[in-house]
Image (cartoon, rainbow over all chains, first blue to last red):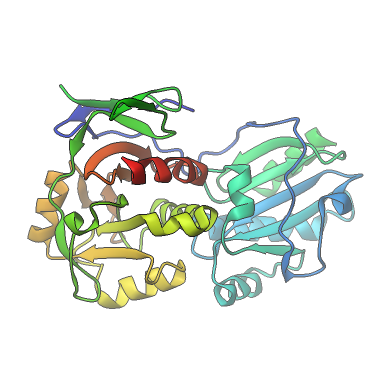
Length: 164
Length: 188
């Protein structure tokens, strides 16, 4: 486990912590097969890892209560509309209320498949520490990169090219 | 001087047995500081009433844009993964925003995050909360960026069943760390 910087005082508590929230980029856990996707569908069609093989794909973890996810959402929408079969995007809604999540989809015009992880058990396997987090899969379904924090269309396209 | 540090490879002395935690470990464990406030429903809460259980204490505010909701969501995930063992832990959140956190905003927050009835969210006046922040070495102050944001220490304390602070988790903790550590805290 990563070590953290602490200034200890009194009870031995932290005065300074390095926070990794919304830090862009990263390649932790690359080369391993992706973990299974949730079976609960928020917006169809249902998608499995097997469906994603043959082309690079992005698995985007998000939540409606996450402000950085709202910052990224228009970029994800633009990307999904411009892929034309050159890759796939799947959203996974993390520990969210379904009504809030559906409102989010409408607001940002997301039309690609979105799965639901209401208890966070699927997301926990990926072990991400920031939202949004996007897992980039290569055409064999292996993790090619992990992108933490909001990304742009250019960022997504670059990672898809690398994974192809 | 007492201090915190280490990680998964660190060892803590708990009774006669070495216990391996995933969180950073207090060495040596120290009694938890006083924590007596009212929750958002007006009910008195004293951390002492949870002696015999593991307790997770965090410091958050309801309109926090990123860190706090992810902390709460990861705690929710950990409780789900713990299954029946979740009954062995009490989650306590202490407000870092006496101005913005009230019955209405906290009710909405815990409902949105599926934590109604699963987390004691404590609120109070600036003086009441300030005493707790000081006792727990928490910094909380209005952010320079404005927009009613609050700069605050974002962490989670793990309290053992014996009432001692045993572990500490940074804001970017993973739910699996709590899933691993809660049963150990509950046995401390």
